[in-house]
Image (cartoon, rainbow, N blue to C red; front, side, top):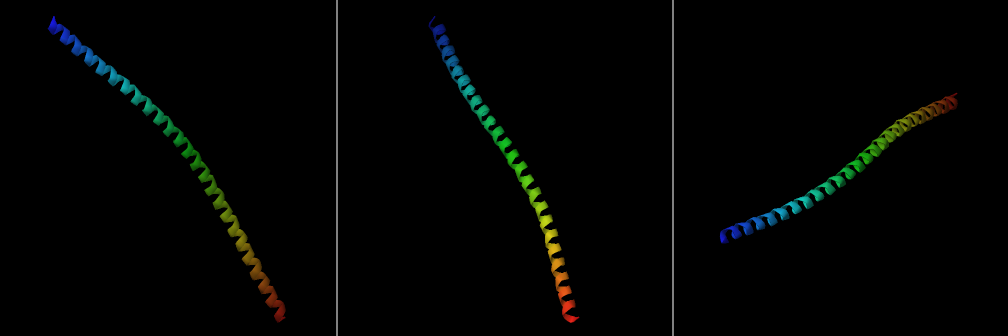
Length: 91
């Protein structure tokens, strides 16, 4: 009987340890779920920032093209003005 009581106590202590391990595992799983949710939100934010950055790059490049055309037109006008001025000064 004494032997049986010892074995039952050992089984009881092992069940307690197992119960503690299961509860710790549940807490760890909850933390992992929380971290995964946070990472998903961060990924969504990064995707939004990347989209905005690409839009800004596109608008910047189109503005650069427009400004280069305006600059070329300005140089053409300036060159034509200097040419006309020199033509009228000679003639």
